[in-house]
Length: 507
Image (cartoon, rainbow, N blue to C red; front, side, top):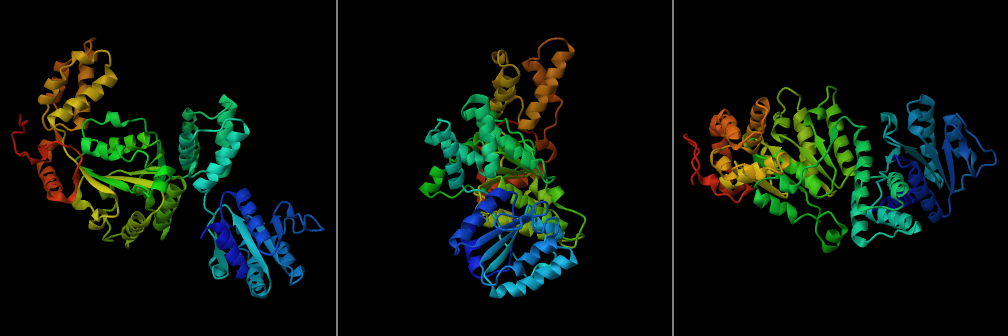
């Protein structure tokens, strides 16, 4: 049931006080007016603290700066006159004892009269003593259909009707924005170019970034990395490329559900975080990074409230990619020891949302220690797929060297022996390869020359790979992955090789 239908039902059922938390005051008021017309053409009386009542009253300004007087009007109108009293920002007065008592008295009266009180507020704030008489009705952000109609109307009005593919991309990018923000970003583009261009999709991401800046829970993470920046991991990249249009309206008409997310498991430095950034960039979606530590507050109930706020914010900005790095560290205390069960409750809220969410929030969670992950996290249905990201093979190391060096020395790439570099760096992760290149650059720079293949190998010889210092952890991860519990991100057969010293490449 959509908002309009539910509001009409509450009006007919004579619910006395309806509370609508929303930032879209103008759009919400228009919807209430539309519903009032279809419910016996009810009169709508709009009040705010500065102007008082406006519109249909003979005495304009009645109740100005007097919220108690605003409620008294409900009793002054004839009992048989159907009406809706729309009160803006009235949440600020609900803690007042006179206002609270008056609302409870009116709730008895309105059971027998065709009148309803509707409170419009940018946030939800209901005192306990009014929770029994107030009904909260969520006013969702505009649907793709509403956004499409608004965008088409605006662009057609300036003689710049977009193509179907452009319209699909535009609608998808605008999801999570209010209609006012959609109009604003289109006006900005039209003012700059006279029309809307494909490059202006970045302006929409900037509008979403403005929303993120208002919270301390999520970070809007810039994603400039591309799929081509990932060396190796062919199975994972193929899986992602097949889902490039999975958030489009065409996919919905086809019957496809929104992709749910990925769980990437592997040792540090193998490209898990890079993959999260590349997904957001490739799909043209905002990347939100969740620092789970910020969810936990010191006050009772604060952690659970922050978790719900995080979920609401992510869904409001959908479609988006929600990146949770090292998720196993966040929920290490789910047994509830030492925190009165707070971690367990937060985890329960989060895991239930993962399983039941229908919003286009693609969750990318990374983990380094499979033993620390709660078993519930690994159940099918939480994520679309679980991938194991192992150490790169020789061919993949060559690709990783090529990616880094092509960025740093695009005109001199042929001067580097990529094959030799890959062969001489067995058991190096992608992060360790990058570290060796940076150290080689320091060597060359200190001698006032460009760095060479030998410099990279010299730097690599000074690095002890994590694969040698964490053998037990890697063996446990590989044994877990090869048992069929996860899909391999790479097509390499290196998982089957022995990881006991000396570490060498089986060529």
